[in-house]
Length: 173
Image (cartoon, rainbow, N blue to C red; front, side, top):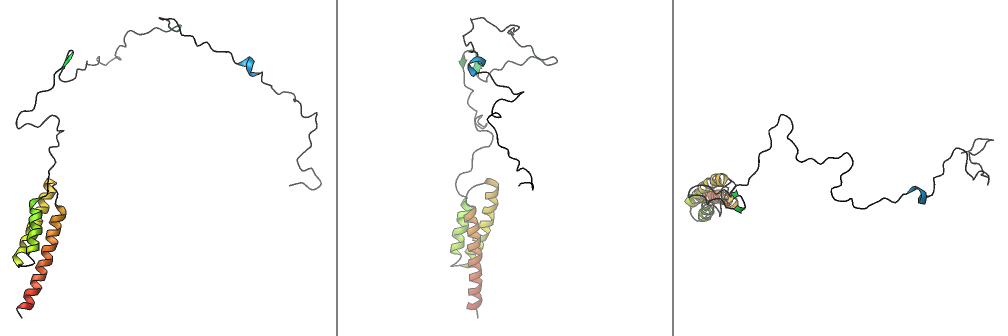
């Protein structure tokens, strides 16, 4: 933007203005400033001036010296493995968590089978519901598989019980 009657802020530069102005600094050529560093390997046993290599570091004041570490089963230059665990004792390699339960809970399977049979006779659906509830409790404690089977046994048992009750109600009329 220009000021009325004034200059736009730009001015033409003359050839005389192109030169160096007073008070500026011109850097010397690169060839003069960079000295080639000496990367020669120092002779063996050389240490920097004023440096003395420590023979061993003493422990800080107030602290005992660090204990020497020796791996279990390691004596001198040979390795002797730890003895195998005795019967009834946990293995040192088990990690303390025990074995993971394997397989599906058998009561969950029995719950689903009894509930399916309950479609034909009413007592099977009641047995299926009871077995399904017991299976759920066991699965929570032992973390076995079969949660879905137990729930399906309960649902099918309730559905077959309701169907049997409706059928019995209309059959007795």
